[in-house]
Image 1 (cartoon, rainbow, N blue to C red):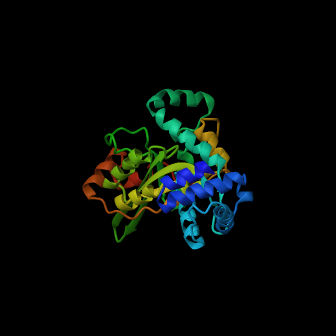
Image 2: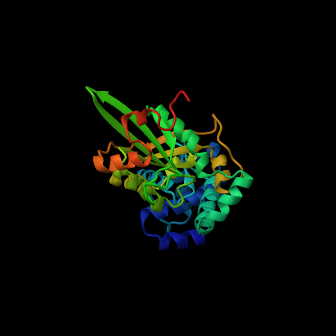
Image 3: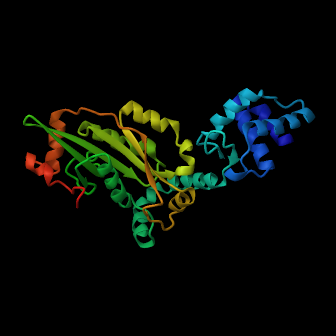
Length: 305
């Protein structure tokens, strides 16, 4: 209790205090799974019992406590989780492991090329493994033609998305082409850098997306800044949501493969419609080998192929 008292005296802001209090109660009660989750009120009651015996500790009003513990549970910096309204709070041990791997993976970023070679041998997930399921998603949102263009180098360093979807509309002899691009990553570990690849594609795409895999049990832990960036730079975000144990396998670089029932794609932030300059759109289409209207209908593959 002395250690908790010391921490609470150092941390004067209410969010940090509620985080320390909640972690102490949940660890003390060994609340490590969603099935054992405690309500904010129950955690607060346990803390009040401690305050009665230790009056020098801060006594946080219940309503204030509930507001701040909700903020703590949604923070990517906290291992306290809540899987939905009225579902209670618990110490998420799986999320702790995920975060440990996130930090390790960031440090290993410089060795990425060596890891890719090793991945092919051991069945680790690679970016290209995301393309088939993202192609399916592009068809689901009514794109008529879809293609993996990740190997193209004709558009410059940041002008090559991984996937492109095309919608074609004709009205009174005029042809309207809508382009959707996707930049895919296995995780969002370095999203502050990677997201700008998707931003760069808005120069020619009507809708541009940044996509990555994440634990479905921890969507509330995605950094709020990511959504802010998407809104500011007018791009969309797709999350390939998998079970937390599968996500841990991916983070630990263990063998994993997608199956029909082990993922779903969430449009975390819809991509707003962008109207790029015709000059850049035409240049991009030309780089894809689309020089005439008829080329639009043979580009990539259609849903029936």
